[in-house]
Amino acid sequence: MKTKIILYGATRCHKSQYYKSYLDSLNLDYEFLDVELNEAHAEALRSLYENRKLNFPTIIIGKKKLQNPSEKDLKKWIEKLI
Image (cartoon, rainbow, N blue to C red; front, side):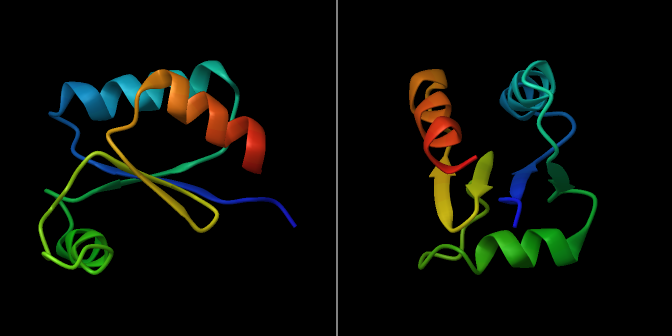
């Protein structure tokens, strides 16, 4: 089974765009969920955090949650889980 990658972010957010570009550069399939344009996506992101805040960008790789990771950390988890 293929590990699923989800990027919670916002189109206007430069960090969200950075992660999209990074994942694209690795030719990885991922789902981008805009938390500003879709309340269901926002609620899904809030449910991941005890404080219920919209902590974006957040990347989910399988069951691993990464909030605004460094490129080094993101690369490490991609290599480990994908």
